[in-house]
Length: 93
Image (tube, rainbow, N blue to C red; front, side):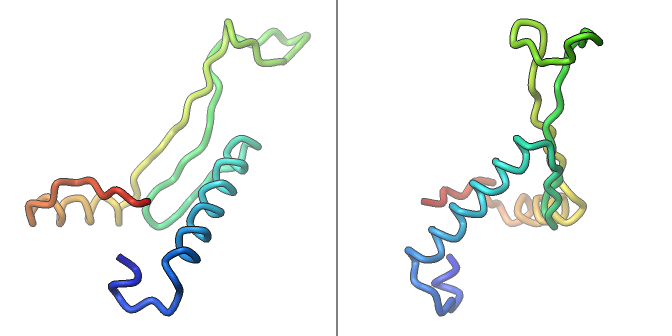
C-alpha cells in the first residue's frame, strides 16, 4: 500500500522497518513499558495473588495479560471503514 501511495522506499526496506518496529514494541512491552500510538494504547499486566516475601511471578498462579485499547482515531477509522463496506482486515506480509 505504501508503495502504491508513492513511497520512495523499496518494498523490502518498508517491510524491514515495520518488522523492526514490531520487535522493539514487543521487547518494550515485555520490559513493562506502555506503548501509545495514534491508533492504540497497550501494556502488559499480571493477574494473580503475589506473595510479599518472594514477589516473583509463578506461572501456576499468575497470568500475563495484554491490554489493548483503541484510541479515538482508531474508533473513527473503524466506523468509516464499516460504512464503506470494508471487511475490516488487511493482511500485511
